Length: 160
Image 1 (cartoon, rainbow, N blue to C red):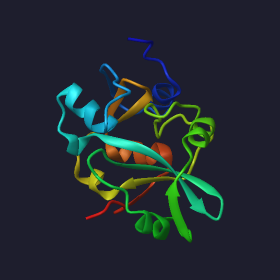
Image 2: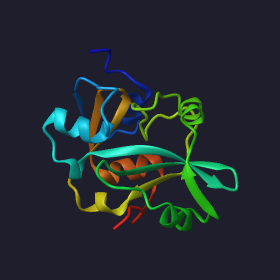
Image 3: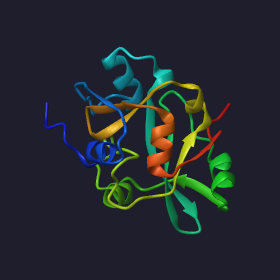
Image 4: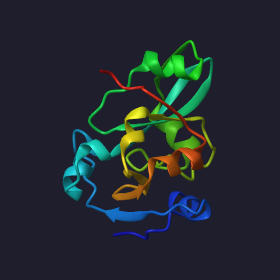
């Protein structure tokens, strides 16, 4: 495994967030990378969250954190963000903006801090798992700590 020091881990440390790191063998061919991570780590998918970068109209990017098994409700996100519409961002733009590779994008320590939205399902969890800033590295932390560190808006933004 590669080094465990990433901008995300450094951001968690700098914010004084209690956290643990988990590593697994990343499989780029997995159909659902987040679900693969949960299975590889033996974790309930309900506590593992994926990070998506979205394009809000007019011309703004945002970071979205939702459960790995959930589907993003683009209309709910647009409403929460006060945007006309939302769609997934181009992967190259997401990588360039965050400084992370797709499959390793963390809500923490991004090159350019984006407005962040966390699905409200995280609020009831004692801890959640998000990407640690590298493919195969996950960070376990309290949802409230993640929301505070990213200045996130917590809203229901998944389908169903």
